[in-house]
Image (cartoon, rainbow, N blue to C red; front, side, top):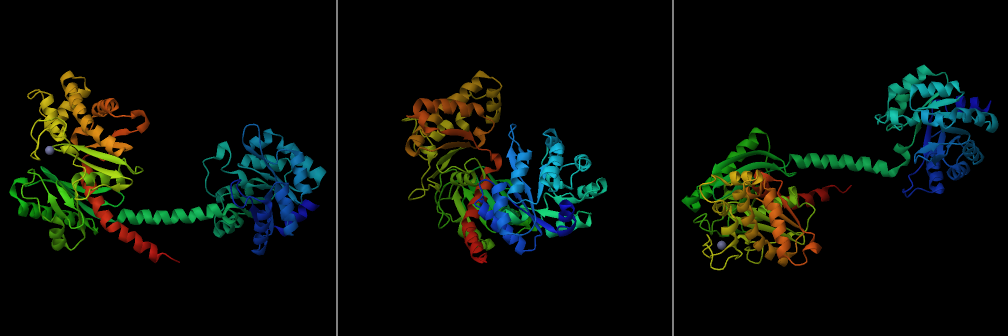
Length: 551
Ligand SMILES: [Zn+2]
Protein backbone atom coordinates (compact mmCIF):
# COMPACT_ATOMS: atom_id res chain seq x y z
CA UNK A 1 0.00 0.00 0.00
CA UNK A 2 1.23 3.46 -0.92
CA UNK A 3 0.70 4.83 2.55
CA UNK A 4 2.81 2.20 4.22
CA UNK A 5 5.70 2.60 1.79
CA UNK A 6 5.76 6.41 2.08
CA UNK A 7 5.64 6.43 5.82
CA UNK A 8 7.76 3.45 6.67
CA UNK A 9 10.56 3.94 4.19
CA UNK A 10 11.75 7.26 2.88
CA UNK A 11 10.82 9.38 5.90
CA UNK A 12 11.76 7.20 8.86
CA UNK A 13 14.16 9.06 11.14
CA UNK A 14 14.34 11.94 8.66
CA UNK A 15 13.72 15.68 8.48
CA UNK A 16 10.74 17.17 6.69
CA UNK A 17 10.92 20.91 6.07
CA UNK A 18 7.76 22.97 6.16
CA UNK A 19 7.98 25.64 3.44
CA UNK A 20 5.40 28.33 4.21
CA UNK A 21 5.47 32.13 4.37
CA UNK A 22 3.35 34.79 6.06
CA UNK A 23 1.11 36.83 3.74
CA UNK A 24 3.28 39.93 4.29
CA UNK A 25 6.58 38.10 3.84
CA UNK A 26 8.75 39.07 0.85
CA UNK A 27 8.93 35.30 0.18
CA UNK A 28 5.16 34.93 -0.16
CA UNK A 29 5.25 33.55 -3.71
CA UNK A 30 5.03 29.94 -4.85
CA UNK A 31 8.28 30.36 -6.78
CA UNK A 32 10.03 31.37 -3.54
CA UNK A 33 8.56 28.39 -1.68
CA UNK A 34 9.87 26.10 -4.43
CA UNK A 35 13.34 27.59 -3.96
CA UNK A 36 13.14 27.10 -0.22
CA UNK A 37 12.19 23.47 -0.90
CA UNK A 38 15.15 23.06 -3.25
CA UNK A 39 17.49 24.49 -0.61
CA UNK A 40 15.97 22.18 2.00
CA UNK A 41 16.53 19.14 -0.20
CA UNK A 42 20.10 20.26 -0.95
CA UNK A 43 20.58 20.37 2.81
CA UNK A 44 19.31 16.79 3.13
CA UNK A 45 15.59 17.16 3.89
CA UNK A 46 13.69 13.96 3.03
CA UNK A 47 10.29 15.60 2.62
CA UNK A 48 8.50 18.91 2.34
CA UNK A 49 5.30 20.16 3.98
CA UNK A 50 3.55 22.85 1.94
CA UNK A 51 0.32 24.81 1.88
CA UNK A 52 -2.12 25.22 -1.01
CA UNK A 53 -2.20 23.78 -4.56
CA UNK A 54 -0.11 26.59 -6.10
CA UNK A 55 2.84 26.18 -3.75
CA UNK A 56 2.56 22.39 -3.89
CA UNK A 57 2.55 22.41 -7.69
CA UNK A 58 5.66 24.63 -7.81
CA UNK A 59 7.45 22.52 -5.21
CA UNK A 60 6.44 19.27 -6.90
CA UNK A 61 8.06 20.51 -10.10
CA UNK A 62 11.22 21.60 -8.29
CA UNK A 63 12.02 18.64 -6.03
CA UNK A 64 11.56 14.89 -6.06
CA UNK A 65 10.96 14.21 -2.35
CA UNK A 66 7.53 13.34 -0.90
CA UNK A 67 5.26 16.29 -0.12
CA UNK A 68 2.87 16.54 2.83
CA UNK A 69 0.12 18.77 1.41
CA UNK A 70 -2.23 20.93 3.43
CA UNK A 71 -4.63 23.73 2.60
CA UNK A 72 -5.13 26.37 5.25
CA UNK A 73 -8.52 28.03 4.82
CA UNK A 74 -10.19 30.70 6.88
CA UNK A 75 -13.52 29.60 8.32
CA UNK A 76 -16.69 31.53 9.17
CA UNK A 77 -15.39 32.08 12.71
CA UNK A 78 -12.37 33.91 11.27
CA UNK A 79 -9.96 31.14 12.30
CA UNK A 80 -7.82 29.03 9.99
CA UNK A 81 -8.62 25.33 9.58
CA UNK A 82 -6.16 22.94 7.93
CA UNK A 83 -7.62 21.14 4.90
CA UNK A 84 -11.28 21.68 5.84
CA UNK A 85 -12.93 19.80 2.96
CA UNK A 86 -12.54 16.75 0.74
CA UNK A 87 -12.32 19.06 -2.28
CA UNK A 88 -9.39 20.92 -0.69
CA UNK A 89 -7.59 17.59 -0.17
CA UNK A 90 -8.36 16.57 -3.74
CA UNK A 91 -6.82 19.74 -5.20
CA UNK A 92 -3.78 19.39 -2.97
CA UNK A 93 -3.24 15.81 -4.22
CA UNK A 94 -3.83 16.81 -7.83
CA UNK A 95 -1.16 19.50 -7.40
CA UNK A 96 1.37 16.84 -6.41
CA UNK A 97 1.04 16.14 -2.69
CA UNK A 98 1.92 12.55 -1.74
CA UNK A 99 0.19 12.79 1.63
CA UNK A 100 -2.47 15.05 3.08
CA UNK A 101 -2.51 16.47 6.59
CA UNK A 102 -5.66 17.82 8.19
CA UNK A 103 -6.79 19.37 11.44
CA UNK A 104 -8.01 16.55 13.67
CA UNK A 105 -8.22 18.59 16.87
CA UNK A 106 -11.63 18.81 18.57
CA UNK A 107 -12.39 21.82 16.39
CA UNK A 108 -11.35 19.93 13.26
CA UNK A 109 -13.38 16.93 14.35
CA UNK A 110 -16.45 19.15 14.72
CA UNK A 111 -15.97 20.04 11.03
CA UNK A 112 -16.04 16.34 10.12
CA UNK A 113 -12.30 15.67 9.94
CA UNK A 114 -12.48 12.00 10.97
CA UNK A 115 -14.99 11.10 8.22
CA UNK A 116 -13.04 13.20 5.73
CA UNK A 117 -9.89 11.34 6.71
CA UNK A 118 -11.30 7.96 5.58
CA UNK A 119 -12.80 9.38 2.42
CA UNK A 120 -9.46 10.92 1.41
CA UNK A 121 -7.67 7.60 1.99
CA UNK A 122 -10.25 5.63 0.04
CA UNK A 123 -10.96 7.97 -2.85
CA UNK A 124 -7.61 9.69 -3.31
CA UNK A 125 -5.43 6.74 -2.29
CA UNK A 126 -2.96 8.77 -0.22
CA UNK A 127 -1.93 8.50 3.45
CA UNK A 128 -3.64 10.96 5.75
CA UNK A 129 -1.77 12.56 8.62
CA UNK A 130 -3.65 13.99 11.60
CA UNK A 131 -2.57 17.37 12.99
CA UNK A 132 -3.50 17.27 16.68
CA UNK A 133 -2.88 19.17 19.93
CA UNK A 134 -3.67 16.64 22.68
CA UNK A 135 -3.21 12.95 23.39
CA UNK A 136 -7.00 12.39 23.28
CA UNK A 137 -7.22 13.90 19.82
CA UNK A 138 -4.33 11.71 18.67
CA UNK A 139 -6.06 8.58 19.98
CA UNK A 140 -9.33 9.54 18.26
CA UNK A 141 -7.54 10.23 14.96
CA UNK A 142 -5.63 6.95 15.12
CA UNK A 143 -8.85 5.03 15.86
CA UNK A 144 -10.43 6.74 12.86
CA UNK A 145 -7.63 5.33 10.70
CA UNK A 146 -5.06 8.16 10.45
CA UNK A 147 -1.77 6.94 8.98
CA UNK A 148 0.22 9.08 11.41
CA UNK A 149 -0.34 11.74 14.06
CA UNK A 150 1.51 15.07 14.06
CA UNK A 151 1.99 17.24 17.14
CA UNK A 152 1.66 20.33 14.90
CA UNK A 153 -1.22 22.08 16.62
CA UNK A 154 -0.02 21.83 20.23
CA UNK A 155 0.02 25.44 21.44
CA UNK A 156 -2.39 26.60 18.75
CA UNK A 157 -5.74 25.48 20.15
CA UNK A 158 -7.79 27.14 22.87
CA UNK A 159 -7.00 24.34 25.37
CA UNK A 160 -3.25 24.28 24.65
CA UNK A 161 -2.56 28.02 24.17
CA UNK A 162 -0.30 28.00 27.25
CA UNK A 163 2.25 25.78 25.48
CA UNK A 164 4.74 28.00 23.69
CA UNK A 165 7.83 25.79 23.53
CA UNK A 166 8.63 22.38 22.13
CA UNK A 167 7.44 19.69 24.54
CA UNK A 168 9.49 16.56 24.27
CA UNK A 169 7.33 14.87 26.92
CA UNK A 170 4.25 15.36 24.74
CA UNK A 171 5.92 13.49 21.87
CA UNK A 172 6.75 10.66 24.29
CA UNK A 173 3.13 10.57 25.51
CA UNK A 174 1.86 10.35 21.94
CA UNK A 175 4.25 7.50 21.17
CA UNK A 176 2.86 5.63 24.19
CA UNK A 177 -0.76 6.37 23.30
CA UNK A 178 -1.00 5.42 19.61
CA UNK A 179 0.18 2.56 17.41
CA UNK A 180 0.63 4.68 14.29
CA UNK A 181 3.78 6.73 13.64
CA UNK A 182 4.12 10.01 15.55
CA UNK A 183 5.70 12.90 13.69
CA UNK A 184 7.11 15.69 15.86
CA UNK A 185 6.21 19.18 14.66
CA UNK A 186 5.75 22.62 16.23
CA UNK A 187 8.14 24.92 18.13
CA UNK A 188 11.19 22.81 17.19
CA UNK A 189 13.97 25.41 17.30
CA UNK A 190 17.28 23.58 17.17
CA UNK A 191 18.96 20.48 15.72
CA UNK A 192 19.19 19.23 19.31
CA UNK A 193 15.37 19.48 19.67
CA UNK A 194 14.95 17.48 16.45
CA UNK A 195 17.36 14.79 17.56
CA UNK A 196 15.70 14.56 20.98
CA UNK A 197 12.32 14.07 19.28
CA UNK A 198 13.62 10.91 17.55
CA UNK A 199 15.11 9.77 20.85
CA UNK A 200 11.62 10.19 22.39
CA UNK A 201 10.20 7.87 19.75
CA UNK A 202 9.13 10.22 16.96
CA UNK A 203 9.03 8.62 13.53
CA UNK A 204 10.12 11.79 11.72
CA UNK A 205 10.52 15.48 12.47
CA UNK A 206 9.00 18.49 10.70
CA UNK A 207 10.69 21.88 11.10
CA UNK A 208 9.34 25.08 9.55
CA UNK A 209 9.88 28.49 11.16
CA UNK A 210 13.41 27.76 12.37
CA UNK A 211 14.49 27.07 8.77
CA UNK A 212 12.20 28.88 6.36
CA UNK A 213 11.14 32.13 8.03
CA UNK A 214 14.06 34.59 7.77
CA UNK A 215 12.02 37.34 9.47
CA UNK A 216 11.68 35.30 12.65
CA UNK A 217 15.22 33.99 12.51
CA UNK A 218 16.48 37.58 12.18
CA UNK A 219 14.26 38.74 15.03
CA UNK A 220 15.70 36.10 17.34
CA UNK A 221 19.22 37.40 16.66
CA UNK A 222 18.12 41.02 16.98
CA UNK A 223 16.48 40.49 20.34
CA UNK A 224 19.51 38.60 21.62
CA UNK A 225 21.67 41.59 20.74
CA UNK A 226 19.17 44.02 22.23
CA UNK A 227 19.21 42.00 25.41
CA UNK A 228 22.97 42.27 25.56
CA UNK A 229 22.93 46.03 24.94
CA UNK A 230 20.24 46.52 27.55
CA UNK A 231 22.24 44.51 30.06
CA UNK A 232 25.41 46.47 29.25
CA UNK A 233 23.56 49.79 29.56
CA UNK A 234 22.13 48.85 32.91
CA UNK A 235 25.68 48.28 34.17
CA UNK A 236 26.89 51.76 33.17
CA UNK A 237 26.62 54.21 36.05
CA UNK A 238 26.99 57.94 36.52
CA UNK A 239 27.15 60.22 39.55
CA UNK A 240 24.50 62.92 39.64
CA UNK A 241 24.79 65.89 42.02
CA UNK A 242 21.87 68.30 42.25
CA UNK A 243 23.12 71.42 44.00
CA UNK A 244 20.05 73.28 45.24
CA UNK A 245 19.90 76.49 47.23
CA UNK A 246 18.74 74.58 50.33
CA UNK A 247 19.78 70.94 49.91
CA UNK A 248 22.13 68.97 47.72
CA UNK A 249 20.97 65.60 46.47
CA UNK A 250 23.49 63.17 45.11
CA UNK A 251 23.17 59.68 43.75
CA UNK A 252 24.27 56.87 41.49
CA UNK A 253 22.22 56.46 38.35
CA UNK A 254 22.39 53.89 35.55
CA UNK A 255 22.19 55.01 31.95
CA UNK A 256 18.68 53.53 31.86
CA UNK A 257 17.62 56.03 34.52
CA UNK A 258 17.58 53.70 37.51
CA UNK A 259 18.55 55.45 40.73
CA UNK A 260 20.72 53.04 42.69
CA UNK A 261 21.45 55.18 45.74
CA UNK A 262 20.70 58.71 46.84
CA UNK A 263 21.65 60.95 49.75
CA UNK A 264 20.67 64.46 50.78
CA UNK A 265 22.89 66.98 52.58
CA UNK A 266 22.29 70.65 53.43
CA UNK A 267 23.93 73.09 51.00
CA UNK A 268 26.29 75.54 52.79
CA UNK A 269 24.79 78.25 50.59
CA UNK A 270 25.84 81.22 52.73
CA UNK A 271 29.49 80.26 52.90
CA UNK A 272 30.68 81.24 49.46
CA UNK A 273 32.42 79.66 46.51
CA UNK A 274 35.22 77.67 48.17
CA UNK A 275 32.83 76.10 50.67
CA UNK A 276 30.43 75.17 47.89
CA UNK A 277 33.20 73.57 45.81
CA UNK A 278 34.44 71.65 48.85
CA UNK A 279 30.85 70.57 49.53
CA UNK A 280 30.47 69.25 45.97
CA UNK A 281 33.74 67.35 46.36
CA UNK A 282 32.43 65.69 49.53
CA UNK A 283 29.19 64.73 47.80
CA UNK A 284 31.09 63.13 44.89
CA UNK A 285 33.41 61.32 47.33
CA UNK A 286 30.38 59.90 49.15
CA UNK A 287 28.95 58.71 45.82
CA UNK A 288 32.25 57.08 44.96
CA UNK A 289 32.34 55.21 48.26
CA UNK A 290 28.81 53.97 47.62
CA UNK A 291 29.86 52.90 44.10
CA UNK A 292 32.87 51.02 45.47
CA UNK A 293 30.68 49.17 47.94
CA UNK A 294 28.55 48.08 45.02
CA UNK A 295 31.60 47.26 42.87
CA UNK A 296 30.56 49.88 40.33
CA UNK A 297 32.77 52.28 38.42
CA UNK A 298 30.86 55.44 37.55
CA UNK A 299 31.97 56.86 34.21
CA UNK A 300 31.37 60.54 34.80
CA UNK A 301 30.09 63.20 37.18
CA UNK A 302 27.10 65.38 36.35
CA UNK A 303 26.31 68.51 38.34
CA UNK A 304 23.01 70.35 38.12
CA UNK A 305 23.29 73.72 39.78
CA UNK A 306 21.24 76.82 40.39
CA UNK A 307 22.53 79.62 38.18
CA UNK A 308 23.37 79.80 34.50
CA UNK A 309 26.19 77.68 33.20
CA UNK A 310 28.44 77.56 30.16
CA UNK A 311 28.26 73.81 29.47
CA UNK A 312 31.45 73.91 27.37
CA UNK A 313 33.70 75.25 30.13
CA UNK A 314 31.54 74.13 33.06
CA UNK A 315 31.69 77.61 34.53
CA UNK A 316 28.81 79.24 36.38
CA UNK A 317 28.22 82.36 34.30
CA UNK A 318 25.78 83.91 36.72
CA UNK A 319 24.05 82.95 39.94
CA UNK A 320 21.63 84.95 42.04
CA UNK A 321 22.00 85.73 45.73
CA UNK A 322 20.48 82.33 46.49
CA UNK A 323 24.12 81.16 46.21
CA UNK A 324 26.35 84.15 47.05
CA UNK A 325 29.80 83.97 45.42
CA UNK A 326 28.81 81.19 43.01
CA UNK A 327 29.02 83.44 39.93
CA UNK A 328 32.33 82.70 38.17
CA UNK A 329 32.94 79.38 39.95
CA UNK A 330 34.05 76.44 37.82
CA UNK A 331 32.83 73.23 39.48
CA UNK A 332 33.69 71.21 36.35
CA UNK A 333 37.37 72.08 36.47
CA UNK A 334 37.51 71.63 40.25
CA UNK A 335 35.90 68.18 40.27
CA UNK A 336 37.82 66.99 37.22
CA UNK A 337 41.08 67.76 39.01
CA UNK A 338 39.88 66.14 42.22
CA UNK A 339 38.56 62.88 40.71
CA UNK A 340 40.07 62.53 37.23
CA UNK A 341 36.68 61.80 35.68
CA UNK A 342 34.72 63.63 32.99
CA UNK A 343 32.47 66.29 34.56
CA UNK A 344 29.44 67.94 32.98
CA UNK A 345 27.72 70.91 34.59
CA UNK A 346 24.31 72.22 33.65
CA UNK A 347 21.75 74.66 34.93
CA UNK A 348 19.42 72.71 37.24
CA UNK A 349 16.24 73.52 35.34
CA UNK A 350 17.89 72.58 32.05
CA UNK A 351 19.05 69.34 33.66
CA UNK A 352 15.46 68.54 34.65
CA UNK A 353 14.42 68.97 31.02
CA UNK A 354 17.21 66.57 30.05
CA UNK A 355 15.91 64.08 32.65
CA UNK A 356 12.37 64.35 31.26
CA UNK A 357 13.67 63.85 27.73
CA UNK A 358 15.73 60.76 28.59
CA UNK A 359 13.88 59.12 31.45
CA UNK A 360 10.55 60.88 31.89
CA UNK A 361 7.41 62.20 30.25
CA UNK A 362 9.09 63.78 27.23
CA UNK A 363 10.87 60.78 25.73
CA UNK A 364 8.95 61.01 22.48
CA UNK A 365 8.55 64.81 22.48
CA UNK A 366 10.66 67.17 20.39
CA UNK A 367 9.22 70.46 21.67
CA UNK A 368 8.44 70.72 25.35
CA UNK A 369 8.89 72.97 28.35
CA UNK A 370 9.64 71.74 31.83
CA UNK A 371 8.78 74.21 34.60
CA UNK A 372 9.98 73.67 38.15
CA UNK A 373 7.97 75.13 40.97
CA UNK A 374 9.72 75.19 44.34
CA UNK A 375 11.70 77.75 46.29
CA UNK A 376 12.29 79.34 42.89
CA UNK A 377 10.63 78.99 39.53
CA UNK A 378 12.82 77.73 36.72
CA UNK A 379 12.50 76.14 33.36
CA UNK A 380 14.17 74.14 30.67
CA UNK A 381 12.97 73.52 27.18
CA UNK A 382 13.66 71.52 24.07
CA UNK A 383 13.09 73.16 20.72
CA UNK A 384 13.06 70.88 17.66
CA UNK A 385 14.62 68.06 19.68
CA UNK A 386 17.49 70.11 21.16
CA UNK A 387 17.98 71.58 24.61
CA UNK A 388 17.56 75.31 24.19
CA UNK A 389 20.26 77.26 26.06
CA UNK A 390 20.40 80.59 24.24
CA UNK A 391 23.40 82.51 22.90
CA UNK A 392 24.82 83.32 26.35
CA UNK A 393 23.27 80.36 28.27
CA UNK A 394 20.60 82.59 29.86
CA UNK A 395 17.61 81.11 28.02
CA UNK A 396 14.63 79.67 29.89
CA UNK A 397 14.73 82.20 32.74
CA UNK A 398 11.03 81.55 32.99
CA UNK A 399 10.88 82.62 36.62
CA UNK A 400 11.84 86.14 35.65
CA UNK A 401 9.19 86.74 33.03
CA UNK A 402 7.46 89.91 34.31
CA UNK A 403 3.83 89.27 35.20
CA UNK A 404 2.96 92.19 37.52
CA UNK A 405 4.23 95.65 36.52
CA UNK A 406 5.79 97.29 39.58
CA UNK A 407 5.05 94.17 41.63
CA UNK A 408 6.94 92.46 44.47
CA UNK A 409 10.72 92.52 44.33
CA UNK A 410 12.54 89.37 43.15
CA UNK A 411 15.91 87.78 44.00
CA UNK A 412 17.10 88.89 40.56
CA UNK A 413 16.87 92.54 41.63
CA UNK A 414 13.87 93.31 39.43
CA UNK A 415 10.25 93.34 40.44
CA UNK A 416 7.01 91.64 39.43
CA UNK A 417 8.74 88.41 38.22
CA UNK A 418 6.72 85.19 37.77
CA UNK A 419 8.88 83.49 40.40
CA UNK A 420 7.63 85.76 43.20
CA UNK A 421 4.02 84.92 42.26
CA UNK A 422 4.35 81.20 41.58
CA UNK A 423 6.89 79.82 44.06
CA UNK A 424 6.41 78.10 47.39
CA UNK A 425 6.45 81.37 49.35
CA UNK A 426 3.70 82.71 47.08
CA UNK A 427 1.48 79.70 47.73
CA UNK A 428 1.89 80.13 51.48
CA UNK A 429 1.08 83.83 51.09
CA UNK A 430 -2.12 83.12 49.11
CA UNK A 431 -3.26 80.63 51.74
CA UNK A 432 -2.91 83.31 54.45
CA UNK A 433 -0.02 82.82 56.88
CA UNK A 434 -0.90 81.01 60.05
CA UNK A 435 -3.49 78.73 58.46
CA UNK A 436 -0.97 76.21 57.20
CA UNK A 437 2.59 75.25 58.05
CA UNK A 438 3.79 73.95 54.67
CA UNK A 439 3.00 73.88 50.99
CA UNK A 440 2.37 70.11 51.17
CA UNK A 441 -0.29 70.84 53.77
CA UNK A 442 -1.94 73.49 51.58
CA UNK A 443 -1.96 71.16 48.56
CA UNK A 444 -3.40 68.29 50.60
CA UNK A 445 -6.08 70.59 52.11
CA UNK A 446 -7.01 71.91 48.65
CA UNK A 447 -7.58 68.35 47.43
CA UNK A 448 -9.60 67.58 50.55
CA UNK A 449 -11.94 70.48 49.69
CA UNK A 450 -10.63 73.31 51.88
CA UNK A 451 -11.82 76.52 50.11
CA UNK A 452 -8.93 78.73 51.32
CA UNK A 453 -6.35 76.22 50.13
CA UNK A 454 -8.18 75.72 46.83
CA UNK A 455 -8.31 79.42 46.24
CA UNK A 456 -4.57 79.67 46.98
CA UNK A 457 -3.75 76.97 44.40
CA UNK A 458 -6.03 78.67 41.84
CA UNK A 459 -4.40 82.06 42.42
CA UNK A 460 -0.99 80.53 41.86
CA UNK A 461 -2.31 78.84 38.69
CA UNK A 462 -3.51 82.22 37.37
CA UNK A 463 -0.09 83.82 37.72
CA UNK A 464 1.60 80.74 36.36
CA UNK A 465 -0.69 80.85 33.33
CA UNK A 466 0.37 84.43 32.62
CA UNK A 467 3.99 83.31 32.34
CA UNK A 468 3.18 80.07 30.53
CA UNK A 469 0.97 81.84 27.98
CA UNK A 470 4.02 83.85 26.85
CA UNK A 471 6.09 80.69 26.56
CA UNK A 472 3.38 78.82 24.64
CA UNK A 473 2.90 81.73 22.25
CA UNK A 474 6.63 81.92 21.65
CA UNK A 475 7.57 78.24 21.35
CA UNK A 476 4.38 76.31 20.47
CA UNK A 477 5.39 73.27 22.58
CA UNK A 478 3.51 69.95 22.50
CA UNK A 479 3.99 69.32 26.20
CA UNK A 480 4.25 71.38 29.38
CA UNK A 481 5.70 69.43 32.29
CA UNK A 482 5.31 70.76 35.83
CA UNK A 483 8.01 69.58 38.21
CA UNK A 484 9.19 70.46 41.71
CA UNK A 485 7.52 70.32 45.10
CA UNK A 486 4.46 72.42 44.19
CA UNK A 487 3.59 70.17 41.25
CA UNK A 488 3.59 66.92 43.21
CA UNK A 489 0.21 65.42 44.11
CA UNK A 490 -1.34 68.58 42.75
CA UNK A 491 -3.91 67.65 40.12
CA UNK A 492 -5.82 70.80 41.00
CA UNK A 493 -2.90 72.97 39.87
CA UNK A 494 -2.70 71.09 36.55
CA UNK A 495 -6.39 71.47 35.81
CA UNK A 496 -6.54 75.10 36.97
CA UNK A 497 -3.47 75.96 34.87
CA UNK A 498 -4.97 74.24 31.83
CA UNK A 499 -8.23 76.21 32.26
CA UNK A 500 -6.36 79.48 32.62
CA UNK A 501 -4.17 78.78 29.61
CA UNK A 502 -7.21 77.97 27.48
CA UNK A 503 -8.47 81.49 28.27
CA UNK A 504 -5.18 83.21 27.48
CA UNK A 505 -3.66 81.33 24.53
CA UNK A 506 -4.77 81.90 20.93
CA UNK A 507 -5.68 78.90 18.78
CA UNK A 508 -5.84 76.83 21.97
CA UNK A 509 -7.75 73.83 20.57
CA UNK A 510 -5.43 73.56 17.56
CA UNK A 511 -2.30 73.46 19.70
CA UNK A 512 -3.12 70.11 21.33
CA UNK A 513 -0.90 71.14 24.23
CA UNK A 514 -0.64 68.52 26.97
CA UNK A 515 -0.06 69.73 30.53
CA UNK A 516 1.22 67.09 32.91
CA UNK A 517 3.16 66.59 36.11
CA UNK A 518 6.64 65.14 36.09
CA UNK A 519 6.64 61.47 37.02
CA UNK A 520 10.29 61.59 38.08
CA UNK A 521 9.38 63.11 41.43
CA UNK A 522 11.87 63.89 44.14
CA UNK A 523 14.69 62.15 42.28
CA UNK A 524 14.34 64.26 39.12
CA UNK A 525 17.27 66.55 39.98
CA UNK A 526 19.75 63.72 40.49
CA UNK A 527 18.46 61.90 37.41
CA UNK A 528 18.87 65.11 35.42
CA UNK A 529 22.43 65.66 36.63
CA UNK A 530 23.31 62.05 35.80
CA UNK A 531 21.63 62.33 32.37
CA UNK A 532 23.80 65.34 31.62
CA UNK A 533 26.92 63.32 32.52
CA UNK A 534 25.65 60.40 30.45
CA UNK A 535 25.14 62.66 27.43
CA UNK A 536 28.57 64.18 27.85
CA UNK A 537 30.30 60.81 27.51
CA UNK A 538 27.49 58.74 25.98
CA UNK A 539 27.80 59.81 22.38
CA UNK A 540 31.52 59.03 22.31
CA UNK A 541 30.75 55.58 23.67
CA UNK A 542 28.11 54.89 21.00
CA UNK A 543 30.49 55.91 18.20
CA UNK A 544 33.23 53.65 19.54
CA UNK A 545 30.87 50.67 19.81
CA UNK A 546 29.54 50.93 16.27
CA UNK A 547 33.08 50.98 14.86
CA UNK A 548 34.21 47.91 16.74
CA UNK A 549 31.10 45.93 15.77
CA UNK A 550 31.66 45.76 12.01
CA UNK A 551 31.93 42.10 11.17
ZN1 LIG B 1 13.25 87.97 38.87
